Image 1 (cartoon, rainbow, N blue to C red):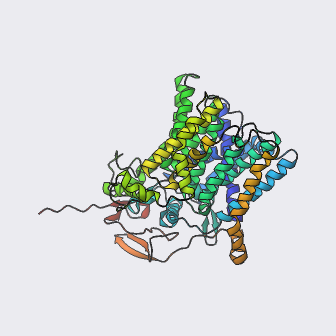
Image 2: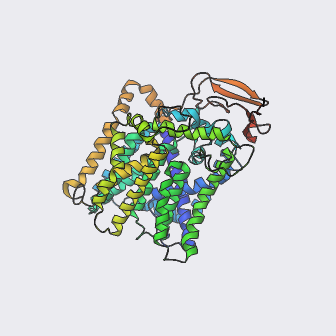
Image 3: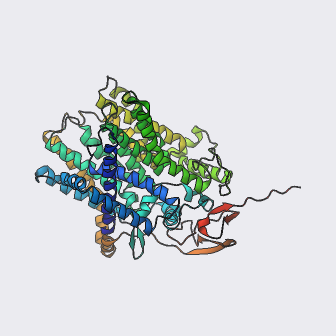
Length: 571
């Protein structure tokens, strides 16, 4: 727990410092509203986006190793010295001027939430994909620059989630291997957003109940689904939290009243989500619409070129990494085929990876590697069969939310209502995109949860205002929910106290399975698991199976991989 907490604190310092620097630069460039800093949790997200963009450029020429950590530490230390007054003022503003009842209650609640998150963030990873390819992806990131044709070794090593770059940077060494904490970092940020809203409403009763209830419901619903994966280095739970926070930012800063700086924050968060996971692509509609609304406020170069340049800063390195890893601009979408390079994955192999994603998400009764050929009415029953309880409820509420939204926003909207309605509409479109592209709940959780609850939340729900006893209802609900979800962890403390004591110092790491080293081609020996399909943290290169025709492009692993296609034979 202490190791994960330390990673969170280091991440907070690094990203918040970069976020402050980004706002100071924007202020000097004349960006409207940049002189007013948002809360640290939002600055941290901005800094994380900037750090990810820089690491994507770095990874093109060097590994995210100890040298990268030293360079980032030196840069952040320099920024802290140069902007020490702004950073000190920012953190002093977060400390209560007086510890009144709301501040004390908020502090205790935040500690309880952090304890809940740390309990789950330090257990042994349970996500299957962590062992299949994600820990291997981190090892490749830490030891080599982007490896040409890495997808030829294993197609999922080339899925190219940009999350693994800052995750590799912000690792912490232990006696049993590196510990990672970034995959769970956005949930403490969400906890801070929740507690901040509750404390503010208790001090100044909030007429709009959504500002109190919606952040809390987002946090609880996402935690219910992803808490067992907080210790897994997967992009699914991180992307879901980032999507929820992005949609919440848009709702609270609607385009009609948002400053230029707030619109750019929206763009940065949306672009970051897409580079984390391609299934988040519909969220880009939010900054596009926000820019369109203000198209008459400035001349067109100022209106469009600044957001476009910022978007390209985040997007172009990601697209470049896609091309270098696979030979395709967007992977696994082989239809976008623009390059002819020797390390390109064979078209059929790339198509099979895409088919696998779709068929497994649909739970189709066909080979996962075959092109999807079942009609909607053929795969829908199999897909719906496991959608029971929480998943089924969220899916029904999300896909059916237009019925509620049509009634909810039937009257002319104020700018505030426009923000909530616009965020819901994009979330619902994201659900439609998810349903068609790959309807696995974890792929679309951020969109589904927002689309499910947004139309039901109003200024006077669940009470006309957070006054009297209603002001304590969210506190009570959140506290009871957290204590209820800690029951399994408390049982673990009673039955396995020794393991729990070990987890206080550092998280339980994934096992390293026995492997077999197979000679594949000259100078190339690949490990495969002795049993099962998961390599976990085995030495590189390791994959669940070896593809036919795999060979090195040069003399070392750093030179990359390619697939030698068989020569067709005639009669």
